[in-house]
Length: 161
Image 1 (cartoon, rainbow, N blue to C red):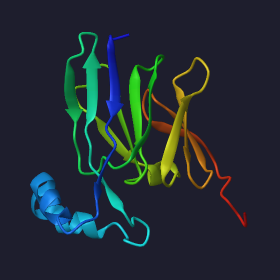
Image 2: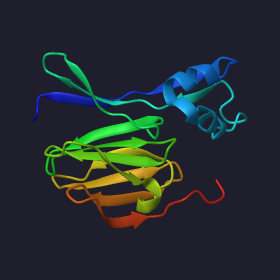
Image 3: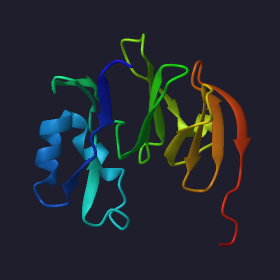
């Protein structure tokens, strides 16, 4: 164990007439495009904001480890002891982020590449480096967290329910 806790920050901005000004201060010139990607009929009150992945050591010192405009709606995060990999899913941006204990930066893979749209859950499988990620449509992908290779896919999508 590294003696550090890692988490992702979930944050939203309320849809108001000042929303654009706030987003411009955070995202710069891409603020309008960013805001338009969220359908107002679905995101009626607020929209997700990008947030950092943050690590906190045993002394309580927090340090931002990664920030990306794609960090939207972190849903689950976990550490696989066998591979030494930390993973985080970002539901709204359909991403899985991962970093091994020896790496200096986070890497990303689309949920689509794993066959999982809108990922939201992660779990280790026994005492292995295998990890299962599931999506809102009930699909499940199993990958090896040591090299991020897909090993098995189950499509249990909702059909008529």
